Length: 287
Image 1: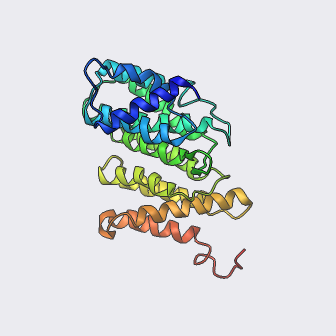
Image 2: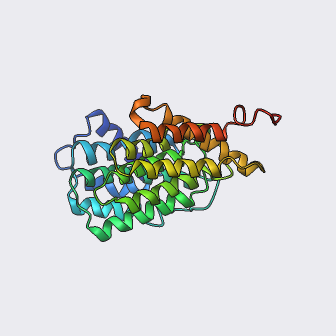
Image 3: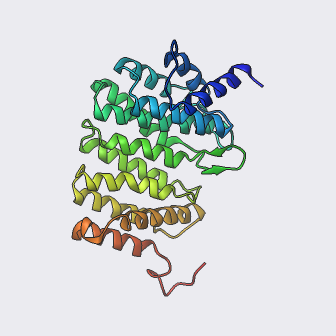
């Protein structure tokens, strides 16, 4: 077994046991390069149980990184060896590097929201990279028997939920996000079954709850989502309908009915009806 990897596991296990406090003489930078190198380790113990929690504690709880250090970590996470590592491939272990990079990117965006450190150009680069990744990701597996959680749709959604809350995310960005969400839901190849619809619905729920986009624009988008997800046809269109319908349901049942207001509530109900083969087309036989 790789001795460097083994030592990293030993160190992070000890650090976790000591509430992520570093010992005298240790610096957080002593560990970051290796954590970034092994962020997509195929074994979930290192990737999911040690590296990600350490990033969470040090970025959000203890705030050990300066603005410059956060920008440096973000630059690595957005590169071809992390968020875009093997993008377009399916069924291999590279997916873990992409999806866990997305999770840590979400932590960094949250820090930026609370205490901005990205300039306009930096934010634009981040937004463009994250939405490009989410649109182009092809490996949509949730839980992988040999490797644990991949969960690209959910992890990407978590990061995008942070993105839409940034001050820099005006109407144009919100609409770009909705298009990326549509592309993920209507991917034509994969039916989500690991509650990805709930994590994706959180993005739109946040838009509504924080008044980030006019409700009539969201209602229009929901109606267009239903139109694209209700067309009869081949297997791909069937998948689009199922994902879109489950998303609408997840969003609708997230809050009390009064929360949405009449326009959004009607749009959600109409969309579900349009995509529900068991109520909308009772004269047709069920396939």
